Image (cartoon, rainbow, N blue to C red; front, side, top):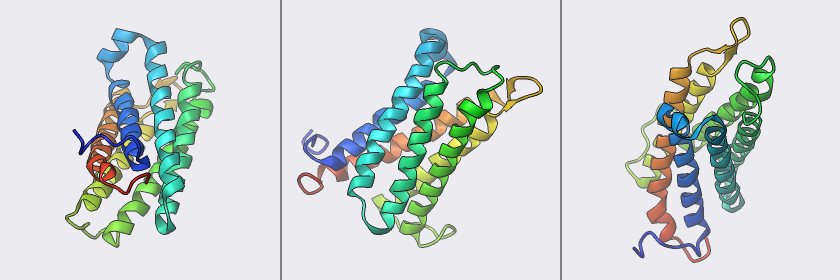
Amino acid sequence: MRRWWAPHRTAWWIAVLFMLGSGCFVVAPLPAYLSRVGGRADAATFFVGSLLFTSAAFLQWRQSIDADRWSSGVQLLGTLFFNVTTFRALSTAVDSGSYDRLVWRPDAFGSVCFLVSGYLAYVGVAGGLLRRPPGTLEGAMASVNLFGCVAFGVSAVAGYVLPSTGAVLDATWTNAATTIGALAFLVGAALLLPEAAASPRGV
């Protein structure tokens, strides 16, 4: 238990908050969850998850240095876009004429930020996008997080609402890619947890 429990360390909180936020994004797209809690609570789950992401991203940015600061800074910006899109989704219906502008657009911007952040982190560890990362914990986290960023990007593209029909381009892909991406982030955060618990006191 001691290996996993270290609430006096900032790195531990980063891992835990990312795990909790990822958990929200894992369950919220599931049709069974939506039918169980209803649309309002489902949208609120996304919003709470985005706030947890932002809290973790802010802590990570605050303690990052050098090149990591660019990756974590862009990631923090992406979470702020997700705050906007999930908050607006609480009161904006998919078939609303302003949905793409109010909800989809900040979601797309957030996904782009995550892709850039994931790319910077991966290249920083592997030395290049097409190079294999080292077989270390850091390499595994960079790989799984980049995969999650790509999945969120796919979700954003599939979530575009066609003006001609007022329907989502592909709701199945949107939900599936969101859940898959969130699962990847959950794994990445879980990989960070033992290292975070063992980090220097207060870090």
